[in-house]
Each structure stands twice: as C-alpha cells, then as structure tokens.
Length: 160
Image 1 (cartoon, rainbow, N blue to C red):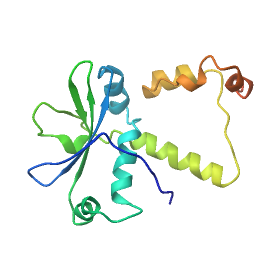
Image 2 (cartoon, rainbow, N blue to C red):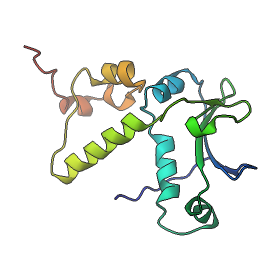
Image 3 (cartoon, helix red, strand yellow):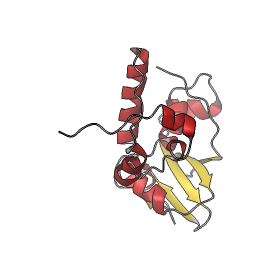
Image 4 (cartoon, rainbow, N blue to C red):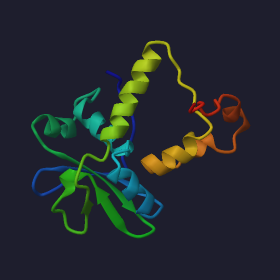
C-alpha cells in the first residue's frame, strides 16, 4: 500500500510491446547475478511496482495497464553484461533469469513494513553483514565500520 518513487536509467518499448526498464551499474555482473539467482534483488522489483501502481497516469502506465509486460534489467558497464528478470528470456545478448529475481526480497520487505506498521523495529545482529552476503548475495555496506550503527547492533543469539 506504499507508493514508491524513483527514476530508472532507461525505459524502452520493445518491438513486441514489452516495456524494458534498465538500470545501469558501474560494476561487473558477478555479485548481481548471484543476488538475482537467489531471489534477493529488490531494485528492479520496485521499478516494476512503480509502473504497476503509479501515483499518476502517463502514456507509459497506460501501456502497462493495457497489458504490456515489464521486463527489468541491469546493464553492468564493467563487463558489458545485461542481466534481466525471467521476462527478458529471448532478448538478444541478454542473460535472463529462470525464476523471480526478487521473490525473497519482496517478501522480506513486506514483512519489515508490517513490523514497522505494528510498532516493531528489528535491530541487526553482529553477523548479519556476513550472513546477507553469503545467503542473499547482498553486500551490506551500511552495517560495516560505522560506530553509530554498531551501537544499535545486537550480539548474535545464543544458539544454546
């Protein structure tokens, strides 16, 4: 139920009527490919949400409302790779995922929003940065080397 605001780097209408949303990244594809394959990529899912639930009507949002499929992709400039969600299958020189690249991320986001709405703010634990990178393919830069963040980070739970 929340509105999302943002700007994609590139919007294209493909000859078959699909809408291609591209975000250019000044990196290589390796880490992003890992995150997408694990279902933890959030950014392109939010671009899709903005087009599917717009706060104003435009020619583009009318195309989506009329049934145009939205393909989301990253163009990594360091290695000239294009990584797309599963709807990008069949596009030339595009590496398309075989499953929903954001299923876990969107589920986690919905749960976090529900918790905050209920008055709960979950703090991070000391091992979260390493865990996020290993399990989700996410580099949690905000959790590393910041004394203010560390002051609000909980120790790991006792496994006993």
